[in-house]
Image 1 (tube, helix red, strand yellow):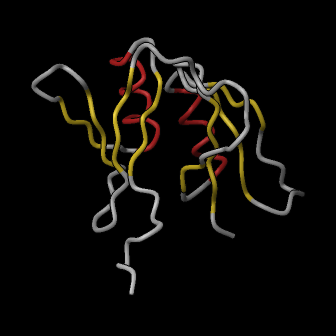
Image 2 (image 1 turned 45 degrees about the vertical axis):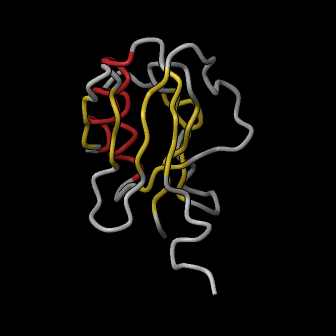
Length: 121
């Protein structure tokens, strides 16, 4: 029998050329909690209770600039989240399509990574 967390996506490493700028972007856009490690690295938790996704920003890696696999962040309102992303220094690269099958949009973060936002129908 597998554990209830088997297969659960739980940890991300996000490339960043400016960790303070990128970490502030995710904090301000999505409410992620930031943690400073003793070695100077910055880690995050996604702000939820229970099954938390965590990770850290890493330097020295190229950004995930072209969509291949698109990791999406759950939001309450895709339109409001798009505005917060832009206000926090991100760029919407694929806007929400009200006629689309899903409520999604893609954005480029300050480090050049392309990710998505997703609103449950």
